[in-house]
Amino acid sequence: MPFLFFDPTMILLIPAIILAGYAQMKVKSTFNKYLEVRAKIGKSGAQVARELLDQNGLSHINVTRADGKLSDHYDPKNEVLKLSPEVYGGSSLASLGVAAHETGHAIQDKVGYAPLRFRHSLFPVASFGSQAGPILAVLGFLFHAGFLINVGIIVFTAAVLFQIVTLPVEFNASSRALKLLRQNNYLNSQETKGAKKVLNAAALTYVASAVVAIGHLIRLLVLSRMMDD
Image 1 (cartoon, rainbow, N blue to C red):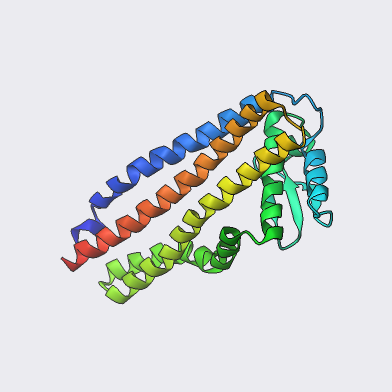
Image 2: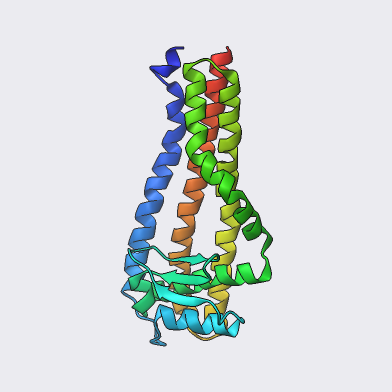
């Protein structure tokens, strides 16, 4: 099994790794750029999120400060919207855009947005598959155990599907965010363009994650075929 010592399939991951690196640099640079551009309305991300939640019948959801940069997320289990310090207290285009995006996730949860529900149902097996799948596949390659390889590929496929389903969830949340910001006059048309650039850059990181996951799955399938041959 020479591919265990020299794995030519690693080349399949190079484009995905390059895209992932670019996406990370893009989101950081874009976020930092528009973090310096203050929205004319002068409200903080926490204030905007609170008002948007209340307007959409989600007054029971708390808005709290999270630790770390770009750590913003909506926690449906505990019904809390957590914003990073820059977003929570900031009044920049980046702050308002990200706060509205996370609010968009809360609204998705309320209306039963199908892709979000599907992603939630996938999470347990996807979490297991992302960790255990490659390990099981490698053990199968080492011990020439086809059953382990197949199980590893199957459970890892759930992790890949989770990454793919994440895309419409994130795109939809961003679309909702921009619409909410514009319709409620938090941002004017020019400011909305800046917020959109921030959210588009963030979306690219999810695209990159999906491409990396797909690349790993293809690599496992190719390795499995190589061993059979």
